[in-house]
Length: 131
Image: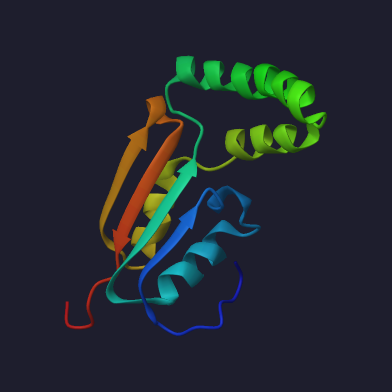
């Protein structure tokens, strides 16, 4: 996401399991926020590396060892799963996404984590013009 051909047209803008693939995270968030109507929300659902070191290690073993074996056995292609592992382990934590959204002017930024912190939903509201 570098330049979306819309104005502030959308009451809700979502990205689901794609945020970690944005080539420029800040630019992508800027565009998502820009095309959101005042009073609307940006909703992000994605996989993130957990902050807890035990869960981070378990996830690393799952992504680096278990998933490639399963992928190779079932799909005969482990390359895609190696990319998946890398993209999840190297993405920024949810708190960095929260900070970036607040820096753009978002309010009521709320994060809910799932599966021991390996996934998160971040919701941020763009204030109405009068706020």
